[in-house]
Image 1 (cartoon, rainbow, N blue to C red):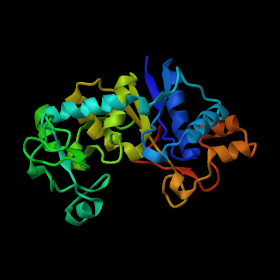
Image 2: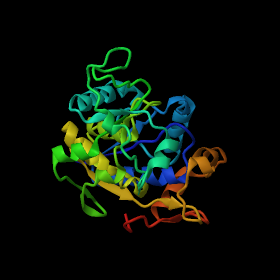
Image 3: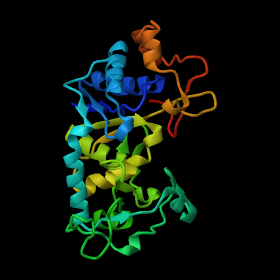
Image 4: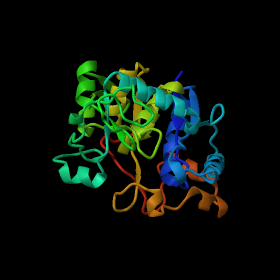
Length: 296
């Protein structure tokens, strides 16, 4: 039996792009007699608000979608993120970094899926160790207070050896986490990065089919590496195309894409909207982007 999930962040209202994503995950689980879970990714500091959680639940009910069990909240799992960080530190795979985004952009010589690739500025200062005192200074004198903790990807790949993962639409993939450079796993402003939290949560929830948009396809290279390092189960992935604006950009909260809540309060029929999305009938001006691999 497969298990899928929908994992929204309560930092703004859902829009049609979210409706499309949740329908894909829900319908894949139901078509195969599997479980569909709801996870609220609420560790984004002050941007995560309880009011948006209530809106998410109301929107899903309005679309006619149900989930199995109670919703899971990332904020209840901070201990697991910290423990994974300590484990990777003890393996000598994390190092503290104080570089700002502006400094990284100025020093970077290449770009990756998330923008400028970190040039390794702080890597030469030595990898921190777990025996850090309360001041934040370890035995080697490296000050880790206020630092982001980066994964030494080259060393991690050397230890795991070649890795593969499978996407249902794109087929077998050779893991290339080096495309991102030394990614941040423990952030200055959050308990964990998306890479670490999502990987740990999917394993904890027993998710066997990770469904998400094509914009996160490359992130799976990093997640496969973390699964190997932390001895986690390896799921199959299903990256679906995105709903896009007329200019080809994906729908986004920050650009004010019409929210599901506004449609719901205006009296629109949510189940009719869900039916239209399933039939690939989208509002004027919105289309299904091809992504890297056509079809669903």
